[in-house]
Amino acid sequence: MIMGKSIIGKTYMAKPDEVPQKWYIVDGTDKVVGRLAGDIAMILMGKHRPEYTPHVDTGEYVVVTNVDKVVFTGKKLDRKRYTWWTKWPGLKSETARERFAHHPERILTESVRRMLPKNKLAKQMLDKLKVYRSGEQHPHQAQAPQPIDLAKK
Image (cartoon, rainbow, N blue to C red; front, side):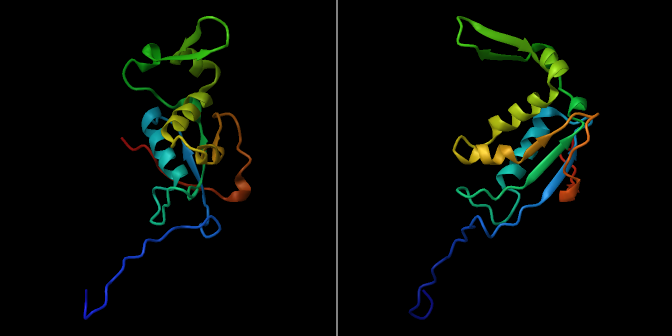
């Protein structure tokens, strides 16, 4: 209380229309999968911004290129297994090396998806992630994505 007046703190809450969204481009060459996914998840959620609001999608778009050149640390490439259910008895399973050979973009996308919050905004956030292999050109030049260096060792 200052001279009979109480000071009430005001918390800023972002509104969906107020937050401008930028585009970033990331080169995945020689980046560790988990560290890269963690940094991308933070940008998709918008936690890198001062006006972050948990119930509003304040994140930005991320384009990842050269995703087939990311690396795993240790022996994860052979020991990590991805399993899924096909509605038949038993589970299907494959190693990270097998999945990386066929669909390297799925490894990064799934890793980022599992780091996002488990709510309705997660789908909107994941839709702002664009992942491309090294030989593919991305169709997002019109958005003028700014290069950003993530997953520094």
